[in-house]
Image 1 (spheres, one colour):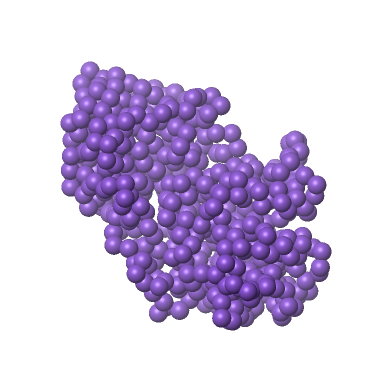
Image 2: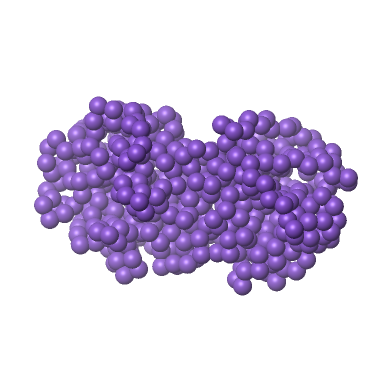
Length: 540
């Protein structure tokens, strides 16, 4: 019988642990120096001019807070670099907030679900993604204003929330204006002799775009925010509708983004031809675009295609990323887009049994570590929907490749479970499982970062929702050393291969060492693995 424990993985109920310095280097793994630590595993396309922000199309997750897939997996695994957050001043049976907003769609049971309770919680998740992948392609965040600005939820407070969470990673109207000296409006900053910046110059940035009504009537909330133009931290995307068609915005210089439902899709092409950026959603109870309307919006050259269908493996018609994972699709197929996004990721497609019980079956990217002390960290991204939920990606230390070997692992299940520590103390013994829980304001699937420390015969497992504050779930001292260390991935008897992604798999201590498929690390199978395909990057 397996043993289960639950540990709260948050600062309020566990202290922050400090990384332990290990010895330098790991045999047979790729080593980089701090000077080149930001470079990708594969050749970069930085020499190409690349497309501009308004020259690409991308999937945009409608009501991104209300999906099975958490923000981290929407962006990393499913390649959606645009998400929407609805913000509200109040929430039923909840205290009033000052300078923060509740996140939900409608304040009614079943309609107010959210993976991040407040705006600051959602922004913290985005910050965690940015910290994990600092050279990421630009992420566009649509902020839908469900309530009017008031004394405790003002324009300046909203801007302050953006900057407090993300600092200089916020791409602002002032940044846009800096590239076009003399521009008096945002429209002038991106048209005529000026233009939107190239995406290569926006790496590591977040663009905030406010929606919620149109801006044809002076004094509305979007018009009021937009008139601040270069002093604001975000942009506005006023609605295009029957009362306020696109031509009505000809003299509205603060609007360079536009928002429209499927019934006004015909304006999307006009927006693009004007050198501006358009977003299309379905509208009504449907919310996000379905397959026919997504295809129509894509054909019209719409830049931001809002859909509720996040999982590209389940719904390949939503794919706007390239064959190697670059998250954008050029409107002009001749544009020089990079092949993939910068960042260290190693992935695997695996079919196998499970890591559990008295014997295991899984794919192993591993090396034999002779140093007495080693600390491994990684982010783990999973499908989080339409997948065998108990498939899992782990950092593991193991005594041998025997299926019943003692081991210790920090794992993330593929769906609907929090991160966990698993271990088998003796050969042929049962597995003990210790699950974590997320910090307040986040759901349990927000945990994405793993840390595994091997110190002699003692192994410690920690998890984190931000990659910085780690909480210890378990520590175990074994009768023997666990020298086989690396990445473990299991499919839990899934009939199809399960894809799992590991970011910045790092061994700390002295010169950093990064584990990758192209390094000299060993790949192998413990037990039976009908499929195990390892690759560098987010796609094979």
